[in-house]
Length: 68
Image (cartoon, rainbow, N blue to C red):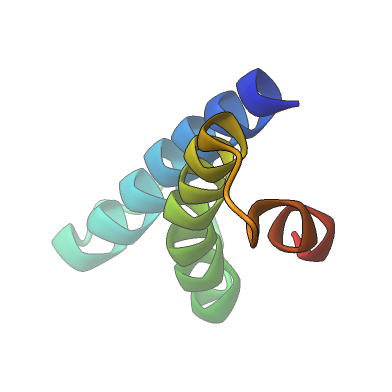
C-alpha cells in the first residue's frame, strides 16, 4: 500500500502540475476544469505524506489512508 501511495502521489503531482503550468503559460493541451486539477495537485503531496507516515507507523497514518 505504501508503494502504491508513493507512485500515485508522484503521478498526481506530475500530471496536475504539468496541466496547471501549461494553463498558466497559455500552452494548454486539453480542456481541464481548473478546480479539479488544482485539487489533484494538492492531494498528490498528501498521498506521499501518508505513505511516509505509514512507513514510519504514525498514529494518524491509517485513518488518513482510509480518508484518501
